[in-house]
Length: 365
Ligand code: NCD
Ligand code: ZN
Image (tube, rainbow, N blue to C red; front, side, top):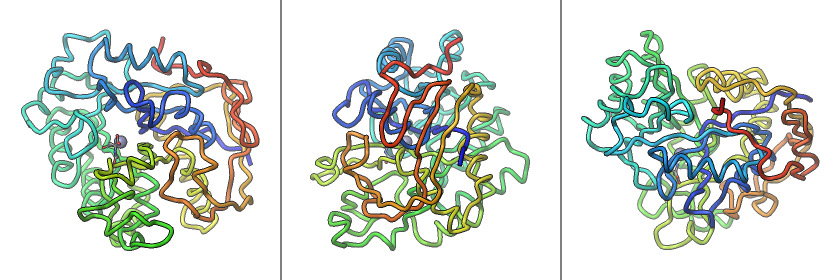
């Protein structure tokens, strides 16, 4: 079956600075293998991407190494809330990412006067994405209403959050949101010590081990609320956040899961189980992200899937550098067989066929 190629609006590429976890080459190979031809890269790299010089650094690496199309977010920091002085730079970015809650890296913003300054100076017609959980989500939706602009909420995971967004939308507020596959397919109750998940000890508590992720994996009730409110979810986004297995199983496991290569098989399995429709998948992984982030159509671009292929997810078969997946051993139905990107066969039968540098910056004029 032929489908439109997917867009993933939330990917941690790790370059510059942490290329032992991932880089522009491996992240975009993982994307293509997952049926994704456009990724939007997050700014919590080392250094974080927060001005012209750091944006150049990320885009330089991307230009040389990316195999699929991309754009790079700028991060909201304590010293760059004067975007009105850098007008020319802003349309070159995917959008502005604001970290308002606990995260990996240095970009967390606690001072609410800074939130206001970013909202004041970032142009209304360019995207703002907020990592804001629970009550800070309510706060950021209020800010968007005050400044009369849209806001996109990253990785919604809780019942109270999806109900808040539902209510905000019903009131006519311009809020959109994304949900990750891990928050749709894993619950806190599933993840108990087991031979399959040896390092997961009581997720959501101290010592989450390998299953540490932000936002945390939620309760069964939360996960059910996400599925019950599918129409409120604008986008699927992987929040592909690779950390090596050694780091994940070490002393202080950094939060984050890889996800680019497992999104589509998990969704195709859900479609097979009649929990999701193909149209919902296309809406949330193609149409809506294209509209929300103003992404161009890619001509002569599509993916082909074998919706009947049954297989087992194994980290050993994945292209991400991180060497593990929270879905190890899962039986899925549906596989990407071929990806055509701008007229070229980019992936076929397990092999990536385009070279580093084939990917284009979708924000370049
Ligand atoms: C992300 C990472 O590792 O960069 N981790 C995560 O658990 N999602 C950071 C983030 O998205 O907050
Ligand atoms: Zn993230």
